[in-house]
Length: 307
Image 1 (cartoon, one colour):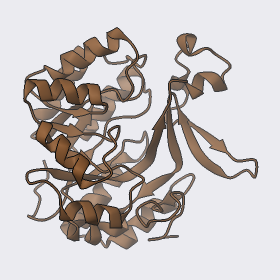
Image 2 (cartoon, helix red, strand yellow; image 1 turned 45 degrees about the horizontal axis):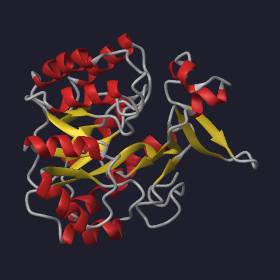
Image 3 (cartoon, helix red, strand yellow; image 1 turned 60 degrees about the vertical axis):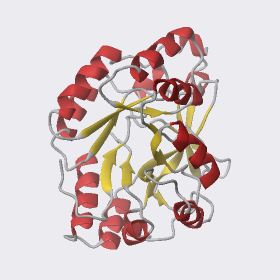
């Protein structure tokens, strides 16, 4: 685990949001176990049909990653629709070993009933300090700021943040924007959701969607809609620290994830300039970078560290 200077945010690897084959997942987490990360979130958050790893596999993986000194958090589904999914949720919430990231209020209810602390994931909408206060009383020990909120909104919440609650910000990756009961990937392939033939496996970074003017602006990832641009807040590192942000979330991607992590780690230690490092990362992105929401502007815009 990386050594963190007091006052500097820790680095977290978010859960994999795409459907990757079993061996690809295992190889990825083997590499991530050696990366300079403080926290690793694991588990399926998008679709229960993505079962390259089952619940036992995830728990075994959590043990292996934890043995490297990293904090491991088990992430739950954001949209539950079946009794089988609720059964899995109950097992995760009652694991008795690892902290759980709740991505829907059903998970919050189960965890609060057990009296165990938990993390509020991106699937839980916390837009003000009053909501955060209610959830903190139920046991929330960390919250992930909704990706559409701005720096100014975060500053207002931080000023009245409940004691003992940490703040995590989605700092790198395609933004998780929305979930739907309809599977957009199955629809794209003219397949019913219940017979999707696991077509998400064909697109390890989702399907990009363009406007009629041929501007790429969204990514379809099963029932999840993401941004096409990659959010990159590395250039805002000093601001994030000044706001008292405790954790920066880096969302997994299939290529060059080590490069992303090393850039954030180097900037955190002072070995690299954040603006220069952000520009270097942005230059390699297939559809560009964005930080518009953070700046209080349309989300697809890139304001800081533009190249």
